[in-house]
Image 1 (tube, rainbow, N blue to C red):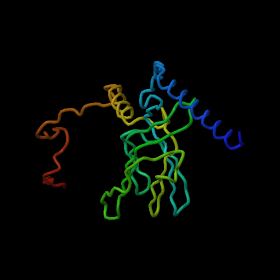
Image 2: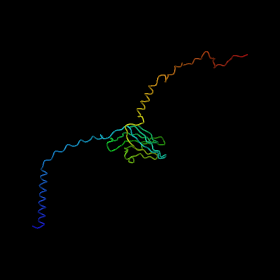
Image 3: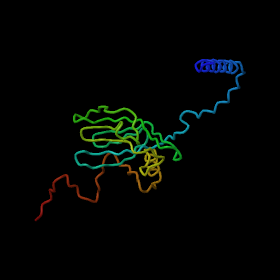
Image 4: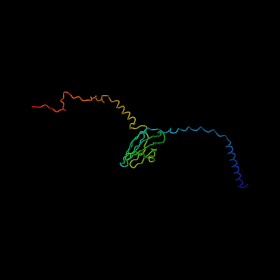
Length: 199
């Protein structure tokens, strides 16, 4: 047998072996699929926060200010009004991802309000969707569970409690006044001129 005959015979044997093993594999019963891993519910790993912390820069003065805003409340920064609608973060055991859906309005010189930004801000990528204005820039820093700034509802409730807790003597009611003032009889009436003559 020549060298080439051996190679072609070996190749045919190999091809036949592959065909048989493929047919055997195809005929074998399929194993039962493994039970799929339970998928985590969407949004289970994110934390909803009541406070969004923003930073803003006044480009004229170069001053950077950090301020807290409660969800669905509006805070004015310069000529901008910032209103966060939601603020999500992740637990500290996971990779940080903080985002907030924010609406930003500008108060124009003629006292009109004009929407200049609506969208998501990401604390890890502040330049991605930061509000850029001719004078002011605003970006999201983080989402928080509480703030040093009192909540708007708490401030109203505290004011109501303070009014209710004042003693009655502190807020005296004015005495009823008569409809017509009666002149005092011991005092001389100064409305008429004195007609007595002195000698």
